[in-house]
Image (cartoon, rainbow, N blue to C red; front, side, top):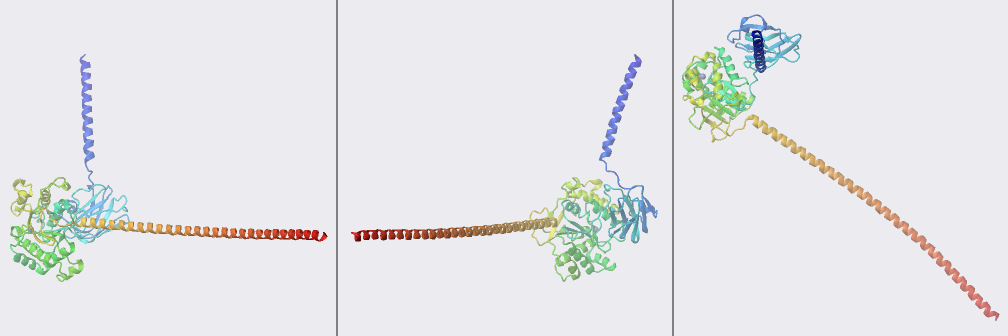
Length: 505
Ligand SMILES: [Zn+2]
């Protein structure tokens, strides 16, 4: 009895464990099915074997011209992070080679189909430079930290002119991600080149990538130096070997190059009083006002044409003010707001996290989650400094009274398509008309032929009738003559008989 009970218990327990195990298995299976497989190749072997090339830290680099990469896995793409200077390179494997013209510090290259089962390749740089990191990937979804940059825009809807690497995420928080999410062509230009702190160039790229910008930025040659006035900032620029004219020339060239519909620039007071911000906005305004004049820096006018920017918004400017809503949840960013994306973008500026900007943007202990919470140097407040398309009325968009380039192209495409259809319709109508005329002429021709035949036939019939009549007349006349002759002869005979009888008596 005791034995049977323990047996039953054993079976129950075994069943229970089996059910638990199968549930666990199903859970693991479903969890692994939704995960994206990691395409980053971990077993990558690199020659020369500098550890800096594989430490995932852009601040450490090695100077080299040739890099050989090998793996147990098939290599589908590579990603090079250059330290201060980007260069072009050639990828070679099994006699197949691919030349990359590269100007990006973070350079991603997908190998072409010619690279079959590629497990080893050589990267030959156009010149020896410092390389920070080398990555390779198998086919599949790339990790989101890999940047796939595109060239700067040809024409930009919005040009943000940021002084430093970080201003675009701080005082201009919201501007970039908001307009990326809304489908505008977003181009950023930096007034300052952090050449003495190259790490900031990487922070800049990482931040931009985070907020959805994928067209490479343009960065000036002007150095970074702190000052509290326009003149102080200009002095710094002059000490570095440049002039005010060089600055104006740069500002004018980017305007003509990108032909922006909207330019966004710094506060005239340099936000917290930064002289470099002031120098940037003052020269930017001058450039906006003169870029339509072909004699103002004629070289860039010849290269790109002149450009009269429809709208210039200046941060915190006192007139024609507009308060932007950067706190709207954006589907493009999975429900995050443009401001929250800029907060995330700013986090990529590792070297700046110690500054007061961090608390200004995020609040103490992250208490700020909305741009509207920021009261000083509000990133939402702008003034329309100059417009060629009228004042804002709705005051809820930088693009009030403007049509984006994509939309303009769509409208133009539609117009061309309409024109094409109209031409086609016109041609169809002309062809139809010509067919109708042809048919008409054929009909007339065939009718005229039929008429001729009918006339000819009737003429023939008439002539036959006349002929027959003539013959009949002829016959009749002969008959008449014969009868007359007979009558005459009979009369003569009768008369002769009468006369003969008379004379015999
Ligand atoms: Zn700044």
